[in-house]
Length: 394
Image 1 (cartoon, one colour):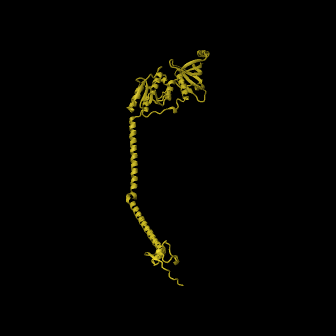
Image 2 (cartoon, helix red, strand yellow; image 1 turned 60 degrees about the horizontal axis):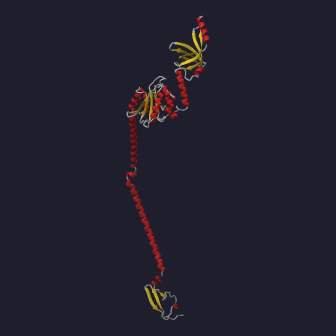
């Protein structure tokens, strides 16, 4: 009877707002109803809540065990079992859940602007001239970064800028030193480091102004915030996300021992390559030297000398033959000339009679008695005078 009266009173109560922590959440496949148990940690009181799955799908933060929520629900009392349940028609995250929802909205907005795109990520320098470190004063994160970086590369230079890493002044201090380090020409990479903490402690590293400043920086930025499971928005916009401050130190500077080993291996590879090249060239030279032209280099000269001597002899024989034939031709021509020459006629006893004007006398009628003439004979010239011509015999 009392249980029924309690139910009637609760029925008259109407819808109420109830805040609690999700202690158990179940969602059966193929149904439109989800079941969860809300618990009040302070009073150790729990109540069963039923709600439509569409309400859960509309939440910006996925519903998981431990999330604090506030539900608007109609209470119901099952008097037969003496249990209270709530039929929710609205459910909202509160506290950390509300904070995560705001961060999720900001993340989606910045992602839509392209601030997290892989194309915007800049590559880190192999060996930076200087490293800027933004961290808490005398923090473990500072010690981890400096110790591990100097252990890997003792000559690395750091410019440490201590700031508040949580609280209301954290964002403004981080923004200021970030701009200072970004303008420093000796700083090639900037590390933002902080140890682990709650979502509220890491909230400054999800500030929109800081995220945009990291995106706009011209110097590559490494984010080393919290533990590997922590993911503030700075991790998404940084050029490299280190899981821990120690990981950031390993990523920013190379290990001198590893680099020396690589150099040694590279030198050995070069030596091996040079030895193989020299062996190959030596084998090639031995092959070339074994050829007749190099084994007996004077052989080709002797062959060419014999060829030249043969050609010279042929040229001389040809020249003598040509000269002999030309001499014979000249003798024959000379004999023909002599045979046709008037001098040959004179040698046979003939004479050429010339008058004083050098005309040749061809007929007795060409001269007069007493005229002086010249007789051209083989031995010279004879002067003569024309006597009376003898009578002509008939």
